[in-house]
Image (tube, rainbow, N blue to C red; front, side, top):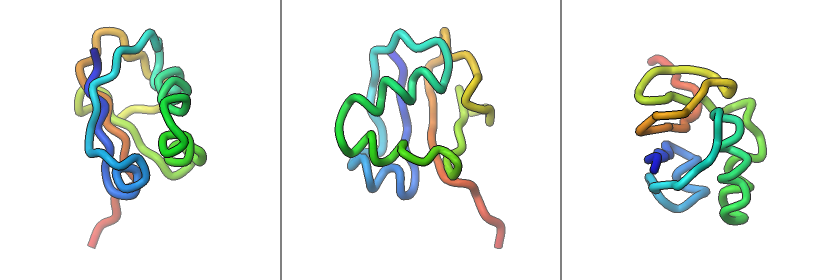
Length: 82
């Protein structure tokens, strides 16, 4: 079981801040494909991955990162300073 966390507009589109997911995904990209099939809201949220960042177990990474053994995957838009 992996905790999937959503932040900012991703959370708004999906309608939840997090969910526990049973997944066979090997990478973040595989997980995204699984999540897209969960609902229309998930498909919409993940339709354009160019503006989505990801962290696996609180470490920034990319879509090719392995998730075997991970406890948490977080998706969020790019952070801006200010």
